[in-house]
Length: 389
Ligand code: FA5
Image (cartoon, rainbow, N blue to C red; front, side):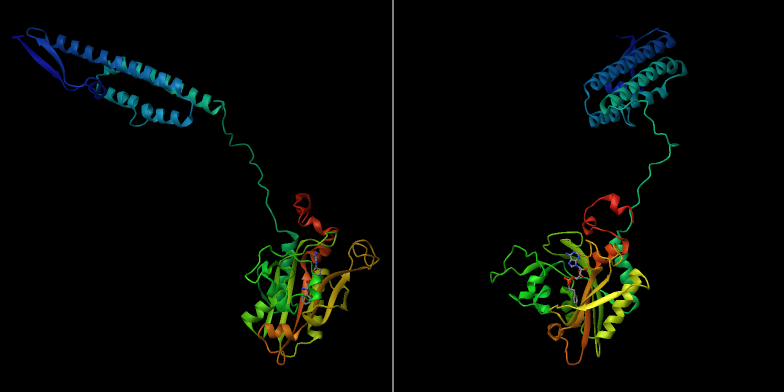
């Protein structure tokens, strides 16, 4: 090889250099025409390039045939067709070729690219099971999203809260899982007192260190009376809406879970007439100016004297029916002047202050307002019932 010189091809496109590590050396024999030699080299380069593209195509197709999961498919797509993908790199390197070469190899490369992209689309459809024809028609009218609304109980609760705040009452909250003390003892119903039988109670199956069951699901919102007095002292005006629980044999008027709204006013010189004025205002606000309110004495251990309040039965208009037990009246609240023992338990001196308290059955009040003939519909979860409000 004395009369020959070597040409080191260093400007091969990147994928070819990768494919053939080391330097590609072509021996140039002395006396050959330059153009002839270059043509030969170029043809050699193009041949390698075509082979590499074909090889890559076969590799991609064989890998695609094995794919079963979307995630793997995605990885393959990135590996070959991604911005830095192997096929993309080859295609990008074509820009270094002359126009004639580009035409020759570019056409092949584009055909292969198209074939591979089609295979990828087919694989995607096969894996996701969706038709390639599936399209989103943005001109179709949208699906109506149902709007919820407030429950009738909340509507009435809001109405009463507005009324009471306008009368200067605070709105308070209290725990539903309550201590035996606040639910009973603090409101003048000591342990073992027969008055405890007035409310069928869910006791929590957990004894304290003295072996007593001292946690209950509160049976009434009166459990918040002493809490409020201890926290705010006198004078005091508050209402407490909330859920109550009783172990009832349920019927059209009785539920095991129902709402009450408690009211408490403590100040100097509070009398029964103040209480009656407030309760009549509430009844008229709820049921209209013509509403008749009947109050009759009733025993509650935490008030003295005590009274219950009834309004005309909506179902029979006072004639008597199964809902009102043929009385023509429906009881909606209990009330009375706060017992001195309760004031004392709340840290308020009964010689200076007096007060009144009441407990509306909020669920019963709502039942009456909307003419709902069975209280159990509230907790029934039937949307046909709720959608009416
Ligand atoms: C009480 O719960 C007393 N804490 C009310 C009270 C407060 C009296 C302050 C005096 C001073 P009573 O058990 O009567 O009272 O219930 C009051 C109201 O709750 C009833 O008038 C009724 O409307 C409603 N109520 C009672 N039990 C149920 C029940 N099981 N289902 C639905 N509503 C009920």
